[in-house]
Amino acid sequence: LGRLPDGVTGSEIQEILWQQSFDSGAAHTSEHANLKRCVKLAKSLTAMGIRWTSDKVKDLTQKISALDQHWGECRNMLADMLTAAAVEDCVEVVQFLDLRYKENRDKADFDIACGVVERIGMELPIRSELRREALKCWARDAKRGLALSPARLVDFLDDEFELGELVAKDLRQKGRLAEAACLLSMLPANQNRVLDTATGDAELKRLRDL
Image (cartoon, rainbow, N blue to C red; front, side, top):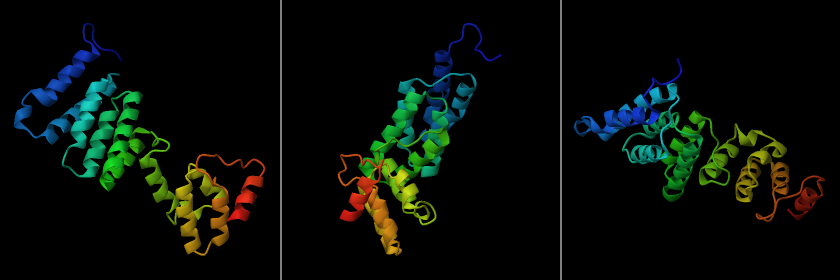
């Protein structure tokens, strides 16, 4: 009927699930199998309106990230686990994945993080390494970012001047010199300053400088 039976708490159910996954006979199975069982059982938590506690989310994230499995398997397990986590814990997991990618620069970590945020309906944090890399891949794709006009493309660059220069370089290589100059004119010359484009005067000055 949409609620727990009398005398049963969400914490008790969570602990029982944890014991079934890691304490009861867990020594006879692999860590991967234990985690997979835990993630599968976690779906029942969501149905009952129970959320993982923050310490459990952190512990599971560390365990799954340490698995020697294909990145797709780790992505699916993390995403399924986070369906039973609070929004604040989801944000912390994404920040952890961003830090992990920043330290290792492993493409598998990038693919895992992008897959997780897509599955749970989040965005990569502004100014994060993951977001910069994702924007770089998207903006420099001939069928995606480079297919847009400079006026539309600049909206996706988060005022990242270095990324704008990379995209402008790609445009120049394709012979689109005017579009490359227009794109650069819409980005601030000083990365610590936001370009005022309300009147167009600032863009015109940048265009003349370029």
